[in-house]
Length: 544
Ligand SMILES: O=C(O)[C@H]1O[C@H](OP(=O)(O)OP(=O)(O)OC[C@H]2O[C@@H](n3ccc(=O)[nH]c3=O)[C@H](O)[C@@H]2O)[C@H](O)[C@@H](O)[C@@H]1O
Image (cartoon, rainbow, N blue to C red; front, side, top):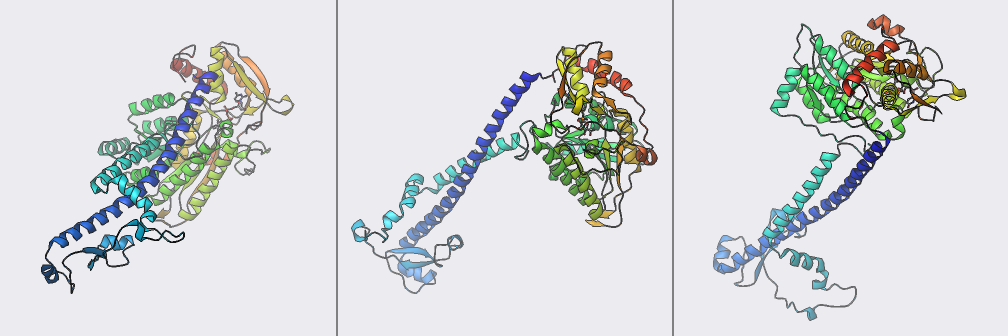
């Protein structure tokens, strides 16, 4: 696991990479300009070379022959050149090569024959740029062409460098890893098809986004286990240790679940997937998670939770058949709501963090796509999900790591030293809620870009219904880890945290048959067992 100094080093390294990106960006833009200029100059000189060439050919042909073969009335024996028939200046005139044969004027090119008065143009001097270019290129089309190719290759190289390491837009932080989709070939298509094969009658065919994430992995395994067909999609970004995501991927692939490395912002990839597979459902779990990280990197939230969501919804609208969508919203949308426990009908217009705002925005986008396009959409408001294969950025996970390492943990406290509390919900309960939402989702009503009728639109809380304070969470961990924590009690900084969450799950209970069954002590026991198995008893075997 990374300690603080490791994190600083990583940060410095990634900042360095970001600087390199900027330099590459500027260089590419510069090369873009140079190459366009060069192509223009190449064409210009190629045309001129052609004109001179035909002029020389014509000069070598006897005048009597020329009048016989060309549609001109009079040709002089010497001093001809080809001139473009339009005004000759436009590129079209040059390229369409409509030339007529005219007599070459007998001009004495001596410099002295031209005026030098200021304001009047001196022919040779005015063409300074042309002469420089002429000398530079040696008027050789072949050399010019070679030079253009060289520049083109250099530009392509810098461009590819950017492609390899970017994949995100400018607001996205350095901490989001490069995203490079590798997809489309026949082997890839075969893997996708195989992974999507159902093993039961009327099995669902699901695209699971964020499949290598915490909830995504568990939901994928549950679907596969009961015989549904599915394929995963994940960008494997490095918001937290990507090796944990790779381990989850291994776990999935052992069960025959193929996880595509790609981003939900990649519309071409999504289009290809929907062309290949008639998905019945999309389980959309890909997101930039974490409440406090939004202060550091707001762009990555906009990138995944807003732009990515819209790209995905657009792809679902265009898909035929249109899938039903179940997606992860968050308890954080309740923000500063004080009505307890939180019900779906409570206010969600007072987000306390940018993360919450992007999830709330997601709910509004979902409604719009449901209303206009007839997409069947179900949003699930998860309440602080925890468990094996969890997220290292979350409190229960990082506390476990630090307690085992003998490092102090920071416990935030609210106003008047009030303990913060969360409705911690065990992963297996969440998975049941997700699967029930998929099973009860009605079909989307749109096709061919047209809505054929009102489509289902639902939002449910998936929580545990019994909040636990953070100090209590720590006590349970201490018991399971048989180690005392070194605690730093700190006044909650203004970081987007809310003082407590508490779910009312009446609606989910009624409509999904959702019933949380795992209390925090039991759930954390399972988590600690997994943690010590995965990282070693002292938590030091693998890096994070
Ligand atoms: O359910 C949700 O809506 C959200 O739950 C979690 O967010 P959070 O509840 O903040 O979970 P943790 O990061 O594990 O924090 C739990 C509690 O521990 C506290 N905490 C966290 C970190 C720390 O060092 N010290 C500390 O006291 C937090 O203030 C919070 O009260 C997830 O990180 C979000 O992605 C998710 O959407």
